[in-house]
Image (cartoon, rainbow, N blue to C red; front, side, top):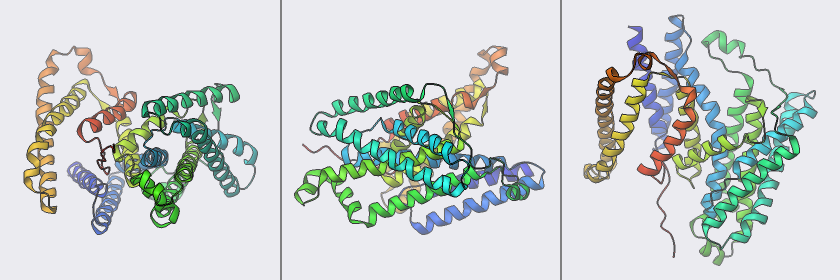
Length: 430
């Protein structure tokens, strides 16, 4: 009975999470989905504790949100620069790395100071240094190529990324550095005793800082005069310039804000994962880029949602123990879903474009996904007898291919929906 109850709670919680992250959902429905998610998480904790078990599902959800909030901060820099300049700033990951090293040097000096003072100085200094680096890169490397072909700017961005990596190795060495711990890493005793969840102060600081920065950014872009200027330049740079907007100043401001957010993300990364090195920004930067593409590059809410989703997916995949047969089932599932998706582009619009039609399309896709999953399982079971006995008994840990899963998501989203979850198609202006 408890296994069936846990399965039902997991399914309802996943459905509520998917509904909460759906684009263009009304505030009331999104709030209702979040309320259902919280209730399901609380029920899972209660059921697990009653059975004498740890709440694994809720722990994984929290771990994914902790990690995804950092990816979201980095992805915001990618999406802001692309939205205004139509440039993918591949040096953004190295700016994130600089923020982590600023945290290392600052906390080495202030580690004996009161913790709030040390964190405040670290955040402010890292964001200021990264903002200065970002606007310097824009002024020296990108602004002279403003009217050049986009390929030239893209190659320049890759060159700046490699330059910053090698400069970091030259200045601080290639050996990993350990960020001084100013926050205790032990789980919060009261929360652990009541729920069994492992949450420490670095996790709490990560989520609070990320949420505050993302809310402030959204309010700044949507409600201030400078934010309106950024949105105007993003819509049409030439028309904004004719209306008297200083385009160069807006682009510089965009680099300042995006780089400052990357610096804050580097501080949060250093607090949670103390070991840092000059090539730190490579993989997290690429994952944040995938998050920006997944959410819809150019969309600030999309970058937030994409970052959280990538964090959740990475943590969930890391906890998997998968047999070769199950891995084959997943590969067949993705392949068949891609084939049916192309057919769906032709037939699904017939269900209607109104709200009821959207729910019909969602139900049809869910039913199709279930049928394809069952079919893929039967096909994988047919392949199983052909595997060797050693392969049949082997178990693959998800941590070995979690990075590959993230980049598979990038390939799938570019093939199926290049605009991302909340992006929109914008034709090139001749």
